[in-house]
Length: 168
Image 1 (cartoon, rainbow, N blue to C red):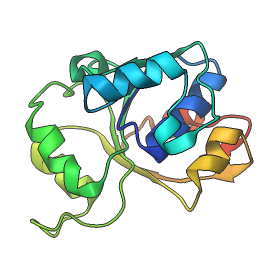
Image 2 (image 1 turned 180 degrees about the vertical axis):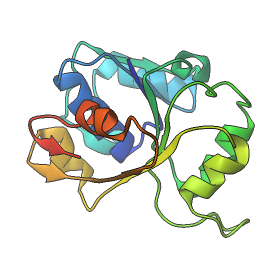
Image 3 (image 1 turned 120 degrees about the vertical axis):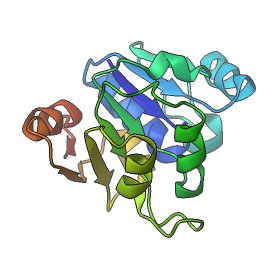
């Protein structure tokens, strides 16, 4: 199972693409109302209207549902990343943490992997980024993403996160 924290356009698009591949995916939305609306509609109408959720995509508002997944993709705004991780200390200690954020934290002036390392210093940390358009990923158009990861299982994660239309 793949966990994705962040139900914005990019997180939702990644969830759809990976679920279409046949993987079990859990997508975390920051509040119950957003999660319920997406479950009811079978899509994220706010960010990717018309991109239907595959059956293997589960929506949740409980971050506990993300613990223990094969990898956790942190697909949220950079300015939300540190707070999310600080609110869930040690919850994700035993899984690869892949930041899918752009920019720097305005408080610490650190990039995504450094922010993750502050909260989870012993974690295997990676970064997954574009250039890409979330709508293209969700529609299954050919897209390439850049993946940086230092741990020995980098090639296995690259293969896991790649799909027939999404080259990581």
